[in-house]
Length: 95
Ligand SMILES: [Zn+2]
Picture 1 (cartoon, rainbow, N blue to C red):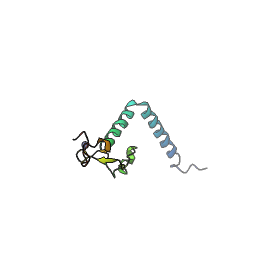
Picture 2 (picture 1 turned 60 degrees about the vertical axis):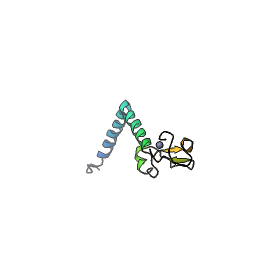
Picture 3 (picture 1 turned 120 degrees about the vertical axis):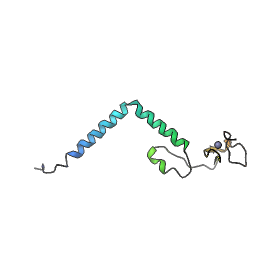
Picture 4 (picture 1 turned 45 degrees about the vertical axis):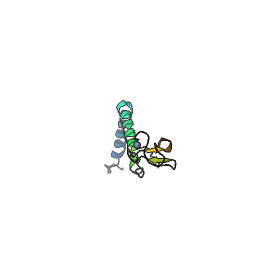
């Protein structure tokens, strides 16, 4: 009847393979460890305007808030409570 279409049965087979790969990854503890490392790297490179690039890392980058500042030395966004001097954008770690 509809056996002339050779491509039709291929698609479901591929999906089954990918599902098995996902199950295998979940069973592998190393996969989780890699995810944690990527999250840490993303936090280290947090920059204003870089939120669109980080979408594929599944890490939510929050834009700089009004009560935050960006350190002029380490370029990390800090809460203003961590500002070393009121007039200068330098955090306590870099002061
Ligand atoms: Zn700093």
